[in-house]
Image (cartoon, rainbow over all chains, first blue to last red; front, side, top):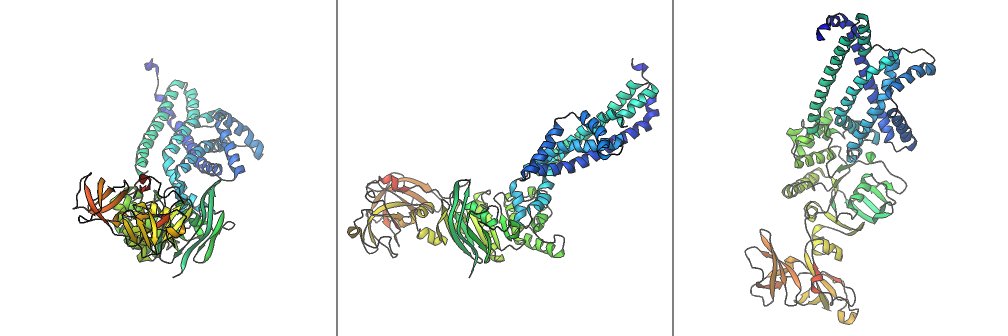
Length: 221
Length: 377
């Protein structure tokens, strides 16, 4: 069986796969950065004393978390051009989608993070001349972010795997690139095994890293 | 001397539960005051109202002659220039000690700020620890960082919420003296909240004993102990026993141990004979009012003893069955059950009117005031 495998096609398609991986990484980084920023704002909105704002944020988060990701990807791909009136490439559409979708998950993590910081910390900030929002920014958010860093990164690993779903709209990520290469050389099995290995190595080493980080943060708290 | 802080008829409730009731006091410039009371008496709420974390339902708070809070207007906490040391210190774990101390300074990177941070760390004896993080310090050191951080912006007033409750007893005693010294050196007016009277006595120039959201008595520690204004204050402060007595003359009270002469005016102006209300006077007898004297004819049986190092606290039973507390130097070691001679050494009589008609019928045991002191956590 294994003797039938031809792994030489892998070396030939490496540059092509590299381009795919680059997009996957880019998409992950953009979605993570945008998602955490937007997610933090959503978390602040949900914890706000302004009822309508809190409810709107909650509605957004709950909706996003109740819909399959593939559906969101397809909807955004079809709806965004209608809204903006301009055609949009699969790559940009994917980035927008992931930012919007991941924000819902990151917001739940940040909300837990903000709530993990004792209320006395805000008061301590206020007692030293900082307004509520300044105390939030300089005292609570840095701590919330630090406390939640391992969980945020774990979510990012999940996000990294989920980016493979953009193949549904034909955006050329690592998975799509391996599929194309596999078809070109007529060697799909070798390709899929190889790509699975890449996903595994990246995700496994990242999760090991998170584990170590978690231990370090556990000491500080 | 002028008042730095004046609190006037302050009232606050959480929901429908009143916590602070028409409370008033004034703090003199440079003084350290202490609000002392059992948990739930509203003392921490008073502190939170002054800091601005709660809005009073009625009354006024003025700082340095300026109104900072009443039922309608509230200066936000960050504008009050009031420093606070929190019960759990609330140090910022993501910042170094120096960054913590400098947090409240206007321009944190300036040479002026850096000098102020050094000055503050020096003041609390942590000059070498500036680069470390809070979790790397001991509880006592964290406490001092919290103090340095609160003092750095030179607040008009410093508030301290049970600042020593997380520390062990020995450290608590040492730090309370140190903190008092630091506050006096920097000339900072401060209010401390605690349930520990030793801490209050060691730290404060003036103590407000709180009960049910009110201040029962606002006085220097010495006066609180020796001239408690109400029965509740006498109960709460120090140890002692109430013994029913009868007013027999001007400043003279007859108790079963003899006649006591008071150099302070009594609550009763006339004698019980002429007053006829049949309430009698419950006289407070502190353990240091009862002196052990072998030559005395008056005998009492040792019922219990508690060794406290320099002295014994004996619980004694009189022939009548009534119990007394007596503080005796520890080389007078007597066994439980032994009879020892005692003598009264009362300079001024502290007495409170009993309920009419019941004073002498109360069982002896009920008049023993089981006062717990220095309750730790």
